[in-house]
Image (cartoon, rainbow, N blue to C red; front, side, top):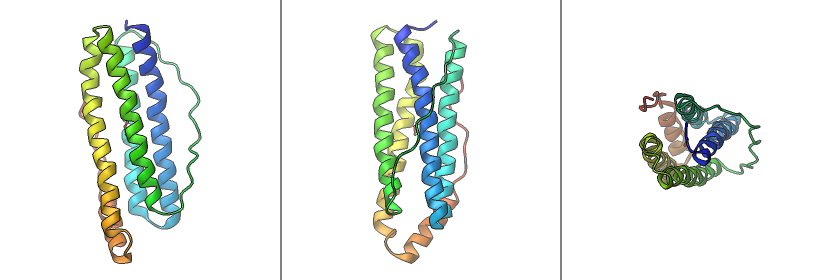
Length: 170
Ligand code: FEO
């Protein structure tokens, strides 16, 4: 069994990860509507990764004899006025998720829960990658996205993203 606060934070984080998936699918909906199928594909895969994060945390709770309670997932409420908007919202969102992961890590540290800290080492590292990926997309869009040929090439590049299962084994 885990410390009550640690358990509750992880349970809440499952909901947050599923919301992340929902948000990124909303980004993808926008991009499909704009004819930017590469951007949409990139976020479809990102949504799969978020679901993976949720399932890893769910398994972690089960492996520690805990129950999992699902809550309602919030409706994505963003308005997109340009193809750059979801990219900026994406970086902000990942920075927010990093703060949530750090809070879980700190709570585990406070009660000497080395098992959770070891598990969440992976998520701390993953958040570094998530923020970098989001930032890279913004940089590329700034460089190439405002020219039609550049936007076309960037869309093709993003279309090539391949889903990879998470490297964390529980
Ligand atoms: Fe689950 Fe994008 O972090």
